[in-house]
Image (cartoon, rainbow, N blue to C red; front, side, top):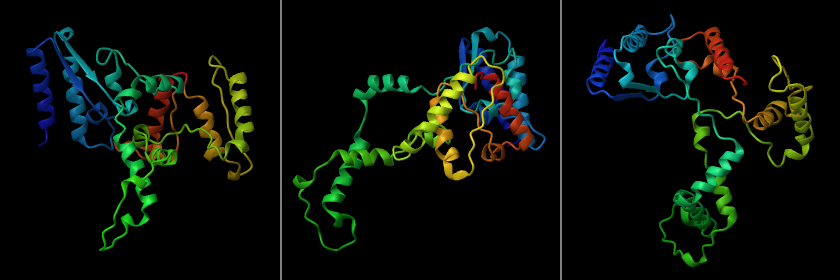
Amino acid sequence: WVGESGRQLRLLFQEAHACRPAIIFFDEFDALAPIRSKHQDQIYCSVVATLLALMDGFEQREQVLVIGATNRIESIDPAFRRPGRFDKELKFELPSESIRKEIIKMHVQKWNLRALIGDAALRALKRTFPGVYQSTSQKINIDTGKIRITENDFTQSMKAMTPSTHRVRKELRMPLPPHIRPLLKADLLEISEKINSIFPMNSYRPRLVVCAKNALYGQTSYLAPAVLYHLENIPIHRFDSESLFSNTRGAIMEETGLNLLKESIKCLPS
């Protein structure tokens, strides 16, 4: 019903005030408080306005902590990021390669490898008994003693798995594939040296364009992702047709691009 979301928000803040000290936690906050636009449904704008009014008029807020979590901070209405509302922002970037290695060392002993082991075992089964998956009315006698799980089975199983971070968004950083590395390694080193020499972190508005005579040189498919992989400690903001036109909040392309620029400025260096 129209107005029910606003009523539930008011009841939530009233309950938190009555039970203080308390914590109000909003997960996926971008879905609750998207950027307001003239192309957007008025219901969403009403929910955002109600939440802003509740946060501004909340008495004795020192005993009630309001926390919002999101993976798309650029999609949150800028009014929530002003002083007096969400006063502090904690950004958790993806860990670097060295930090990921330490995390793996810490947790590898507690990992549940059942899915990986099961997939590797199925690959070994299919390799040893190719007819096991074929539709047939005859029963197949499977001698489990003949099944040998090899290192290649685990390697193929790991290649078939998609990392959880890659399921959420398209990953721009990517190292050079082994079969491409001998061809483009020299170009990658040259670009990396230029970045480190002429574009230090304290330089003013650095610019770099990676280009070639045509698309056959791999500057888009391999070199650019490999350069971004080299700069994994710096936040990356995408400005392509997919990110500009895939906005689901009703914002026009120019407004989406402006919000991306504002977000990149807040995350300097980026």
